[in-house]
Image 1 (cartoon, helix red, strand yellow):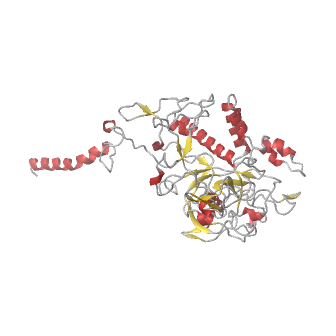
Image 2 (image 1 turned 60 degrees about the horizontal axis):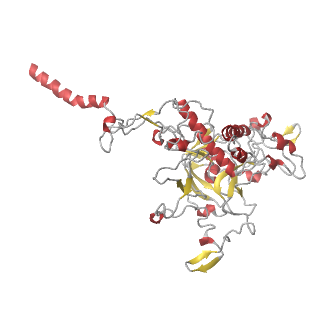
Amino acid sequence: MKKGLKYKLLVVAFAFAAPSLFNSCSKERSGATGWNYNDPKNGGFQKVPYLEQETGPGLVLIEGGRFTMGRVEQEIMYDWNNIPRTVTVSSFYMDEVEVTNFYYLEYLYWLERVFSADYPEVHAKALPDTLVWRKKLAYNEPYVELYLRHPAFRDYPVVGVNWLQANDFCAWRTDRVNELILIREGLFEHFPNQINEDNFNTEAYLAGQYETGKRVEGLEDLNPNRDYRNVRLEDGILLPKYRLPTEAEWEFAAYGLIGNAVEELIADRKLYPWNGHAVRNSDIKYLGQILANFKRSRGDNMGVAGKLNDNADITAPVFSYWPNDYGLYNMAGNVSEWVMDVYRPLTFEDAQDFRPFRGNVFETKQLDEDGLIAEKDSLGKLIYREVNMELDNLQERRNYRQADNINYVDGHWESTIYYIEGEEGVKDLGNRSMYEYSATSLVNDRARVYKGGSWKDRAYWLNPGTRRFLEEDQATDFIGFRCAMTRVGSPVGLGK
């Protein structure tokens, strides 16, 4: 081959190879505009590395799917408030166990340490009602004094907590977990001297209203006009909120049907969180052992001495008994559990079949006169208000027109049985609606659903499809709770 021709071929080969060589060393480009990501010369729009959502402390992933929600056995209570219906639940996270006395004492200690000097009512508001143990014709005083605080009961589920207190605990847990994540990532120091409004709050931090406790200025900002910035939601570092599960989520998780699925077929329905139609273990190795903590019959809370059937007279430690197929403990027995939903007997007829829930009251962050997020309150939290027809221009919306949707198609003015005629047409007659609270019904907008059987209940209530309700500011010696968290991204994990 001639020297000149060989040289030309090498030049051509390099010309074809050069773009790939340069591209391998260049920054990732936008598929929409072709501009580089993470390039200060282009303005610094960032694309951060991200694998998937971190699993928060105490949580397990509940892979979602469809299931038949509602009654699966005879309606012996004749409430007809849980008709069967096929719904789909998205994947989410749920606590492996109920919130324990010790977890709740950790919460109370933090509140006392941060707010006791100027806002002692914050700690007082969070205290469980230990007097729920008292009965007029029973001697339960030892539980009043000892159940919450004695170390013998530290791994038992907390009770005497109402729905409002359970939600406050979830919010507190969100902030503590996210604060620790920022410490772990080297952005914050351990700062135990938080007091009053100067405490870490996730939303206040994201809004730029919390700076105390920082170890460094923040993350390097590729915006050429700034040097550092706070962590943003777009970084995927901070976790979503801990919250109560919805009724549909709780019921779906309790059944654990993932263990009964063959391809796309649910081969066996379940009556309880375990297989079979009995409350005792059928495995030859554990034959006859009780599968949950409940009241077997009148006056029989734990069997006979020498052979206690469930080894518990009241509640039991949260890791007692076998977990279901999701790895969740005590989804039947021990304590009933609060869920997010407002109670209505016809919810299963009315709610959406995708992520069903009743209880939406839509809110938005309060803004100041300059249109910026208003300054946080005296407890360090951002201020919210309900959405408003005029302020938020809801007239043009198609999916909702008001903030409070608790009564939608079940209890609002269109479904009431009492009307008056006015200048503007039909109106609700005062506070009298479809459910006459305290007159013919205990149903109102503060009635919250609780699920599952407890140590005081018969086996009927161990079925996850059963449902009961109590006012959100009331507590009992048999209702506890566990937290949940929304799953973002792939429903099965690792981007599958």
